[in-house]
Length: 103
Image (cartoon, rainbow, N blue to C red; front, side, top):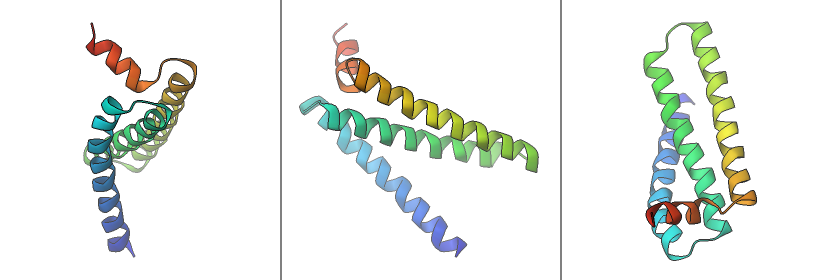
């Protein structure tokens, strides 16, 4: 039960990391909405899992852990919504990074 869930979670984390490695050249070679939204999802998930590990390592006590986890879910939801809004209403992640590199 728990061991299998932990193993699947670990596999998912590695899959998202490999996906991000593939999305970086894709963002440069063929930028577009599909890559922008894929980056939004993968970056949000990667950050969510990473900050979840920080909470696991450094937050102690039942109530503080629950508060931190609620805060993490709110932060992750706002991050994903913000990136999607940026992709839809503005230039998108790929073009924004290209514009920063051109400075």
